[in-house]
Image 1 (cartoon, rainbow, N blue to C red):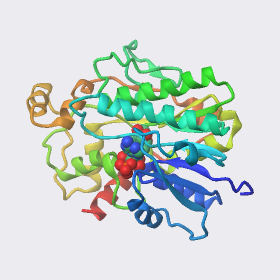
Image 2: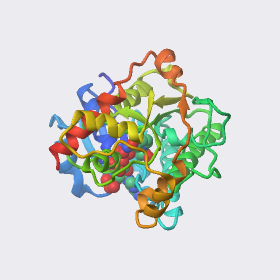
Image 3: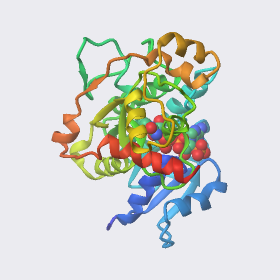
Image 4: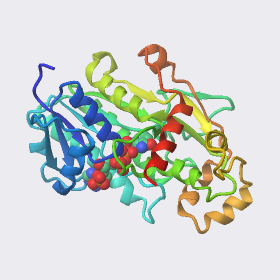
Length: 334
Ligand code: NDP
């Protein structure tokens, strides 16, 4: 890597960003990671296996505050904006999720433009694509957008959709900005450390055997390894500028995830059957994560990711492998 200008990686303490930081450092990049507090710097250094040659540095940034953004982007070759709140259950006030996501994206882009840093890779989500009224059998592509008024649109779904839309609107007004978004499904796989957050919580819950049956919810799966590789591909390949890269290839329904894990761990009590809707409705009264997911029960979901597999020539880790990697991590950290 001859370009010694750093890549600003926002939210470097996150599950996904730790892997991206590790891969960037392995490839020789200089990485400037943003944290909400420098107190997490040592934890991140350990997780990303900092080579200790001063290529990894940190800055403090908060998505909800203006302070620090201009200095953070100055001198960077590009920005990878991954930071965004990602809770499993919706907060009481959905603006608590939407505002940091949207305003943080705007802050990142504005600071980048002012500093003349035009290459941006934004971590969006498949949730910005998937949730809208569609004809039966329709397979969603990167041309599709979630309808934030759709019955399934939780606060998180809205936050990611509106944040990505804000980014593309910004590009329309500032055509010199070269944006690529990476839109991952639910990220499974082997985390860089034991602070893996919301992503693996779903697998953790299935593994726990707490639920006798599982909601029939479709989950597009992607491995952490692929999400990181696609961010770096986006950074390195000019042909991805202007693209939304769908980072997922297979949709598994929750009972199928249960069946896969039950077959892998036959001694564990893991649910495999779909739960009836009336039961889920009753349980959702006491379970905020379930309440958030309830509108997705029974939802059909098909995706067409040929733009990633054929267009960009990318091969994904099979979803079953990725789910099993998550399960291994959950067991190792129990
Ligand atoms: P994590 O919760 O592990 O990471 C989120 C990151 O965002 C953390 O670094 C967190 O900082 C930071 N962050 C949250 N709120 C703020 C704030 N107000 N100011 C500054 N930083 C903030 O989640 P993931 O790594 O899983 O997610 C990373 C990105 O990927 C997000 O944009 C998420 O929407 C997206 N994504 C994730 C998927 C998944 O399955 N994991 C799927 C699709 C998209 P702190 O550590 O201080 O909380």
